[in-house]
Image (cartoon, rainbow, N blue to C red):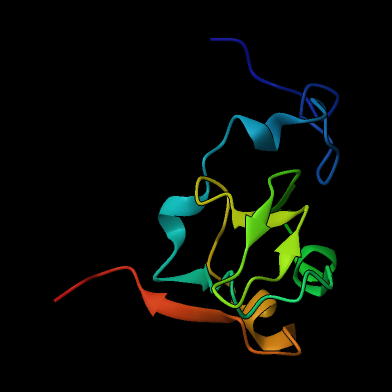
Length: 105
């Protein structure tokens, strides 16, 4: 077996393959998941801006609330990459996002 020298070691903190986070499903780390109340959501994008992953998806998907208000956008959670940090729920100005336990029971 060949011994490695310092020149053979990868440099720490360097991303050698950009975009590799798409391949790693980090949602399994979560203990709580955010759930968006589509009727309460005012489409302000604050959750979308604050999500560090970004696991909040802004979709061109029309939505009509129960009261009849129409939106062209819908926000959904990419649960494959959401780590359940709760920043979205904390920052939501109308509290349309609730954190619920991953484990039901």
